[in-house]
Amino acid sequence: MMKKSLSILALSIGLLLPLSTFAKNNVVVVATGGTIAGAGANSTNSATYTAAKVPVDDLLNAVPQIQNLANVTGVQALQIASESITDKELISIARQINDLLKKPDINGVVITHGTDTLEETAFFLSLVVKSNKPIVLVGSMRPPSALSADGPLNLYSAVALAASDSAKGKGVMVLMNDSIFAARDVSKTINIHTNAFVSQWGALGMMVEGKPYWFRNVAKRFNAASEFNIEEIKGDSLPLVQIVYGSGNMVPDAYEAYAKAGAKAIIHAGTGNGSVAKYIVPTLTKLQNDGVQIIRSSRVPHGFILRNAEQPDDKYGWVVAHDLNPQKAKLLAALALTKTKDPAEIQRMFWEY
Ligand code: DGL
Image (cartoon, rainbow, N blue to C red):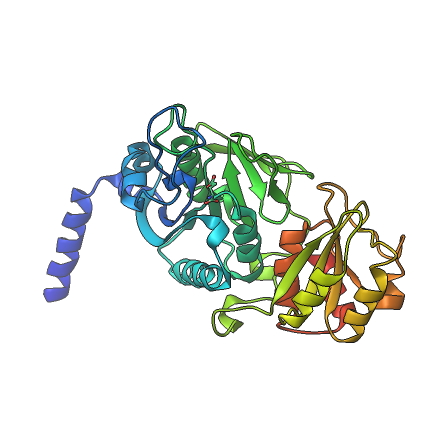
């Protein structure tokens, strides 16, 4: 008798809720700060403002239309300008996203984030979060207080994407300025314009009026297919990896100082094809022999590093970063070093992710 009355109660409650509640996916917006949560003194301050001021509930309330797309809830994970994110915050975000997506009633997540290091957080999540549910990072180039702010529509599109069944299995995505980018190859290339983000391999697709249109998939490993797992990362730091920017008339001190500071790998953001000045080669070969992995990337935004082209990488035991920019190579190197110090194994990882 009790069971029958409970089922009648459940049915009647169900009838009270709008059918759309059950038809819509559940999306959690995890806020971390940035310009999308920024505040300027007046509406004409599109570049002069303070990042990381507006709380997540205000971001969601400013775009009520998102509730038509999904059952949306907000979580304030951080309130920080993204240039100040360290391993501690990065690992914390990844743990929160991984845990959220393990819940069967959560269909996707949106992460609002500063644009300065958005590409790094996106790439890191693509390597360590084990879910193939939609993970969408979104930011803005103008604060919500500015004329023609880009944040509200970016947020609307990001929620629509995270709620879209067709976004499952696409990997971690970045939604900016109507474009859907892949975490591994998107980069911020203009520091003061709404079309700041590009990928040399093109967008995965576009969002138009809340609907995704797809044109390509990622050819590399990510999320469930990754050998890395946030649940295997202990503590709140990764092996230290640093970047040295290549230019003319260099001195070797930066490389040596990083090694002294405990760097387990150094990303050489070289000129051209990751070139190393002949007077710097001895420093890098010594560091490699001392156990600091040298990884050649490039300061050039497009193309990819060829192994054994102008540098005998096989002879030196160096690794090339393939098409990953220096800041992403730094993250993959740090994760690789949680598993191995073997240059050949690290190189395999750079071919595969
Ligand atoms: N301080 C920068 C950041 O938090 C602002 C840039 C932005 O979010 O667009 O990444």
